[in-house]
Length: 221
Image (cartoon, rainbow, N blue to C red; front, side, top):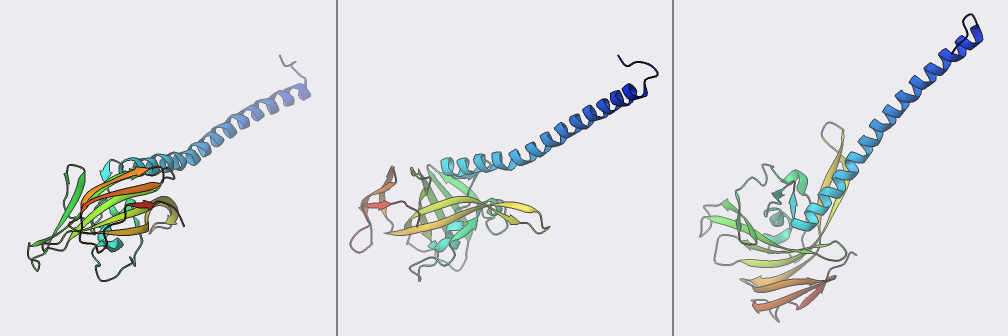
């Protein structure tokens, strides 16, 4: 109770009420800031785990044609020139708008090309899985429209990288970077498995001189 007519007590009481209101407002503001900070963190953890576990982003398969840009369709150069793709931006883009289908464990994308023997180009991949150190292993196949189907073993790293969008807002790129690519040959047939950080290749048939490697270590430089 505040004594009537006591100006000091009344002032103290009013000050206390203002302090409580300020404290409540501060708690609300801090809670909002905490939610804003936690949201990107949760997005980062969830998105990276999804890519590393199933090679999808928000339930959608990563377009196979990204591997064309990562060197699969460039058969004249031994090493890829473009090595990173923002797969978050790639999904739903015009660049990778060709139809995507699934054939068992393989995800395929076909592009019409009337200048080829078959009338189309086809890029496909089989996601093998993740290694102990969270690198990704993918086997790809590229056909430029002829009889060849060139297979490659890719070891990739996925990472969220902050950047700016076209409006200057912070945007989280989901970069997929090729760390190593190993040619398996034309119309390669075999199986690829992961044990820890080792990738084991069992080859049945290949056109690679000397045969495809039997094992590759998945590691960061």
